[in-house]
Length: 192
Image (cartoon, rainbow, N blue to C red; front, side):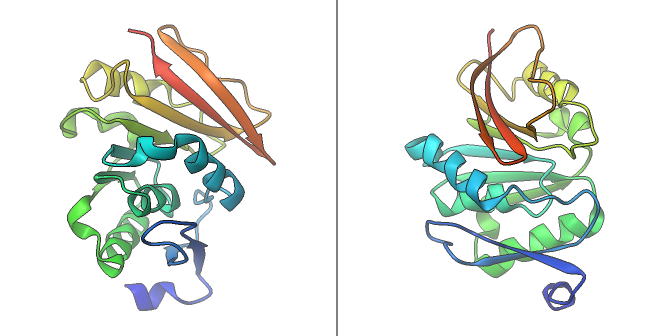
């Protein structure tokens, strides 16, 4: 699989820092794959700081997996990638093997809105980056909360187009919003 991704039908994203720093992630090109810009990704992990170390990290709408692999590189205990596309999910598995981190990775091929009941345990950090054409991930986050995968200690990072409306859902609060070019990162917590 890795060899077939190395052609012009793949995209390449670099891990910014940590134990996997400068390694290249290859993923199949597709209209729904829009890796988080490197500047935004590095700023995100600067904001998170040591919260990543030993965290359980959930990467919803994983796409290239750039954010989840960056979390692993910076000390996350485990990353669960949720990706609906079969080819993209397969490339995430191949990258985990290639990087030697498969024992700390779970790839689940599923729609993010319907994954909560298949997951186990609580997540410390959740990155939600749905395709810009989709609505905010209200249903996915509410399902995760209802199944006990999120609680008031969990921090959710929602990436959206900067011009899109802010996350607004009863029971959730936005703690911080940062803009990086065309994207905004919104930091959310459940107020329960």
